[in-house]
Length: 87
Image (cartoon, rainbow, N blue to C red; front, side, top):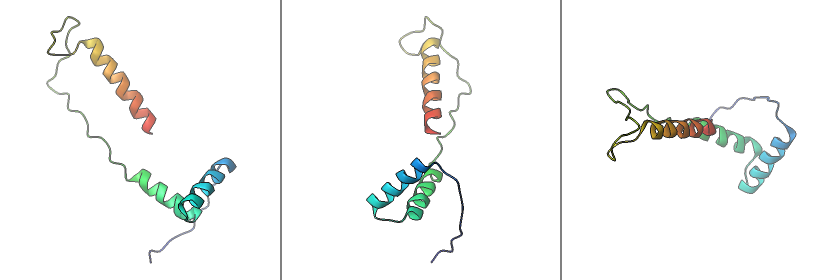
């Protein structure tokens, strides 16, 4: 059996009740529920960095082959928003 240690934390009572309900639904202890969720959150794989070297942004009058600078800015904005939601 893996060695465990005690950890005391302070959480909102509503969060405790939420965890308690989830543990009951999963038929495990609250401790097991918390540990599983913590481990899952730490095991997420970060997205690889985008290599943007040697790239130039298209001008607003770009051809159909590439994106306009406005489109590139919109994509970057969406990616930033998505990254913030994951945290």
